[in-house]
Image 1 (cartoon, rainbow, N blue to C red):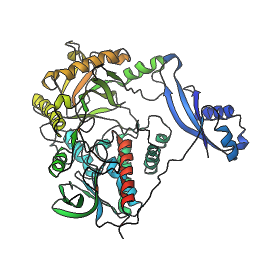
Image 2 (image 1 turned 180 degrees about the vertical axis):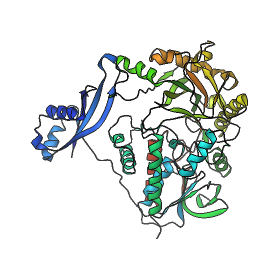
Image 3 (image 1 turned 90 degrees about the horizontal axis):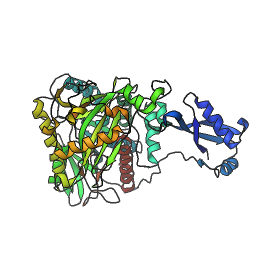
Image 4 (image 1 turned 45 degrees about the vertical axis):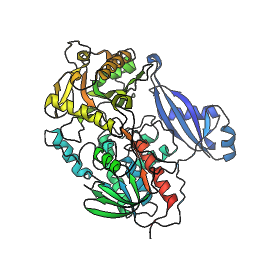
Length: 526
C-alpha cells in the first residue's frame, strides 16, 4: 500500500521535484526502490510574511510492500487509501424508476452513481440545460427580464455552476476524494487532486457538468429540463409516483435534491405532509476589494510573485451570545453577480473563472441568523430572507443592487475606492432600509475585527453590494439513519436544499450516500 510523507516545507521558488527529493531523503530511500513518487497535496502557509512557504505531501509507492509497512510507522508518514465506493446492491425489486428532483451537485452525483450501476434514473430539473441557461442569465445581467425557472439558482448544474467552483469542504468524509477524482475524470483541471484549496472556476465547471449529463444519458438515465417536481402521490408511507408538467411518473424512490432556493417546492412538500423545520443561515452583503490589495494584505512585499496563488481569505468573529459575522465563498479575481430567482427581489452572489484574473476580489460578509430572529414556523426563515430581498428591490425599484462603501456603513463619507462589479448595476443606498439593525451592527463589528487581521479591510472606500441571502438553506427536511424523510420509506431528502450540505463537494457526497442507500433498499429494474 503506498505511503504519504507529510509536512514537507518548500520555498515558493522550489518546484515539485524538490519536494519529492526531500521526501525520499527523509525516508532514506534510493530511487532504485521507488515505483512512483509524486505530489499528493500542496498548501500555502502564509501565516508569517517573513517565512511564506508551501507545505506539501508526497505519495510514495515502493517495490517492496514490506518496506512500506515499516516506513508507515515513522512520524509524518501514513498509508494512502485509494478513495473508493463500497456498494451493496439489493436483489429486491421495486416498481417504477428512481426520480431525482434537481440536477445540482447532489442530484447529479446521485444520478451518475445510479446510472453507472444499472438504474435508469429520471431527473427533473426545473431550469434549462446549460447552453440555454447561460444565455438566459446573460440576458438578465444585461437588463433583460428575469426567468424564474432558469437563472443563477436554477438550471443544469445548480447554483454552484455560477460561482467560483470551490471544492473545499470541512466534512472530512473519505468520499470527498472520490468526488474530486470523478470531477477530474469529467474534465476538471488536474490540480484539484493536489491543491488544499481546489477550485474549478465557473467556466470549466460548466464543461464538467455537461460531460456528466452526457454520461448519465448514455447509460439510460433521463434528464428532463424545464420540469419542476410539482407534487407526488403516496399511499401511506410510500411514494407511488412523482408529478411533473402534468405527467405522473411511477416512482420506486424520489430524491429531493432541490437546492436551497426552491421555496415554492418547500411549500409544496409541507402541504404534502413532509416534515420541514427552520434552520439557521446567514445574511449580509458582498464586499469587494482590489485583488492586489488582498494579495498585499496576505503576502506583503511578495505580493505579485508568479509562484503565489491569488490571495484568498476566510475570516470569522463570534460574540459570547453566539452571533457571528464571517466571510463566505470568497472569489479571488472575480465579480459580484445578480442571483435573483423570484421577481421583485434582489440577490447577490460571487463568481470567478478558473484564471481568477479580474481586478476585484469579492466575498460574502454575512451575519448568522436563526429561528430566534425570524420565527419557529417551518417557512419563517424563507419569509425572512424574502423580506430582505424585496426591501432591496424596493429601494432601487429595479434589479440594480443597493450599494454602500464600508465607510458609509460606519457613517463615514469616504469616497468609493473599489468600483462594484455587479451587473446590471449598483445604486448607492442606506442598508438600514434592507436589514434589521442587529445585522448591520454585527457587520460593522466583524469589519473592525477583520481589519486587524487583513489591511484591505481598513479601506473605507471598499464596496458593499447587497443583499446576500442564499448562504445556505433556511430549512431542513429531517431524515432518519436510512436517509429517509420522516414517515416515508422511499422519499430521500438530499443535499444543500434539504439542509445536509454546504457546497459542491459536500452536496455531491450526500448525493452519493443517498444513491448508496437506494441501492441497499432495492436493485435496478429489468
